[in-house]
Structure formats: C-alpha cells, structure tokens
Length: 435
Image: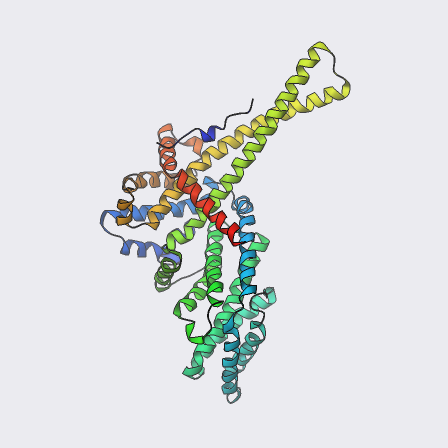
C-alpha cells in the first residue's frame, strides 16, 4: 500500500542584502526612513527576515547548486524566448547610433594626439563594429576585460567631446555595458558557479533588469528616447555583478522607483521574489520525486510480498531468490529514503511558504494590507521573523525546534501556501507562454 505523504497532512487554519546599510546599498536605512508608525517596525523585521532566509538558505532549504538545478530548465526556456524576440525585433537605435558616432570620430580626428582621445576612438570603433551583432554576440574572457577597460574610457572621455555629441556617446557606453553585463551573467549561468544564494539573487536581479533593457531597446528608434532610466538600469545591473557590489543610496532609491514603475513592486520584493520562486520550484521537484519513489516502493513491496508468499509453498529458483533478495533490499533502502525525503519536504515547505508571507508584507503598503484583510501580518510576522532569525543565527534545524515553534511556522506557512503555489505556477506558466 502506498505511503501517505505526511508533508501533505497539515491544512490551512541574506546577509548580502542584510549588509545593505553597511556596505552595499543603504537599503536597510532607506526602508526605515520611508516606513511609517507601527508599520515601520514590522517592515524592518520583514526585511531582516528575508535577509536571514537568503543568507542562511542552506540551513532552511538546501544548497544553492541543488536548487539551481530545479530552476535552470525554466530560466533556459526564458532565454530562448527572449532570443527569439530579439531576432524578430532588431534594435533600430543601433543604426542611428553608428551614424552619430561617425560625427564624434570626426571631432576626435582633430585632437587624437591626446592619449585619452586615442583610447576613446578605439572604443568607439569597437562599438560601431560590434553593435551589428549586439543581440547574438557574447564576449569571451579576454573581451570582458577589454569591455571593462572601455567602460572607464567612455566615462573619462565623455567630458572631452562637444555637449551635442555626448548623448550618442552615452548610447555607445550603454551598449558596451550591456554586452559586458550579458557576458558576465552568461559566464555565471553557464558555469553554474554560484558562490551562495545571495550571489544567485544578485545574478537573477541583474538578469531581470537586463531582460527589461533588451525589450526596451527593441522599441527605441531615436537617440533621445534613451532616457536616464535606461542609463540607470545598465549601471545598476553591471554593479550587481561585481564581486563586492556597491550601490549608492541614490542608486538604491532610483532602482526602487524603476522596479515599482516597470515591475510593479519595490526593490526588496523584486529581488527576494526570486528566492521564493526558486524555493517553490525546488519544493515542487522534491514532491514529484517523492511521488515517483512512493510508487516505485509500493510496486516493489507488492512484488516482494508475492514472491515471499510463493516461497512458502514452493522453493524459489536461484534466480528468483536473487530477485527477492534485491527487492527486499530495495524496499528497506527506499523506505528509509522515502521517510527522509518526507521529512525534508516537511521541513522546507513551511520556510518556503513563510517567505511568501514576508514577500507579501514587503510588496504591499499598510493600506493594501488592511484592504486585503491581512492585518494579522502586522501582528504575527514579527514573532515568526524573530524565530527565523534565531534559526539562522544558531543554525537550528527543524527537528531542534519545540512543538510550539514548529506549530507557529506551520500555521504561518499554511496561510500562504496557496499564494506561494500560485506565484510559482504563474512564473513558470509565464515562461512557457513566452516560449
């Protein structure tokens, strides 16, 4: 008889980002300064909790490399869809940029004796030649270093050309940054060398910003359409991939405005949504794995029982005895594996579902929570957040928690189970439709 999944029994009743206030983006202090009254404390606790969840992801849900294997197929499909879009809709701006840069080169002809101008001329030459293949080309390791050097040349040289030509030069700089960022993302994705879950979140944030940038570039026809938003997006995307990324408070505020405007959510949930989606996809994979193992185990149990009963009335042949021995070993081994998998799923699912609750708290303002009849988030989230922080700080496993602590996480997670499943499913469906 097939086992019943105990992980389905309960029914409904990052240090990287955590260091924002110290060395990354000033995000923590910025959230504090924009929050209000009672909601301020709750919001701070929510930010702290998702920081802990991301920073101690291996404690809560497992190794990032294993989780990546669950997410990888869907992201690969997304890239195929995006590439198809790019092929169907070339960048009209590239041709206009190339014509404009010819004027800049004409200006540089007169002062190319200046060392910086010579470098700038070479940088512009490269962009003009490479822009024709901007959609398909991916820089190799040597070209990445060259692109990094060009980025400095563009910034230093911008003030040396006439003001009328700086706009087109900025577009050349953007295309260089775009190709550099794309190559860095591709390098990490292809090698699957995520240092930790925070690194994964940064790569995914940069990837989403880059995807948006690509879509915008397919519709821009005039140089004047490349606004400050596009420039900010590329600068931030590139910065997120640095080994020790540093965004200014101004960049953080700009990113928050841009993600709210173009993605419908502030910067913190924009980043941390990827954590919930990745964990949701991994949980789904484990549940499918449990179902398959459960069916295989049930089949082996039936066969083993039949052969064992048959052996009581008639001796088995040597070959049959070998088969029975193998079946009994498999049953014993897989029974333990199924129990371990069941415990793993049960442990993970309520951290995953709890992350959905904190994500909603970050996505919505106080008025939205009240309108959605979710005031309980203001009451319960701080208590749940404190428990998750303690688990992260002390590296506590699920089994180490008291029954009341487990019940707290279970109850909180159950509230958001359906929302978490819906979010994960919607994200995966969006990818499939895009393909």
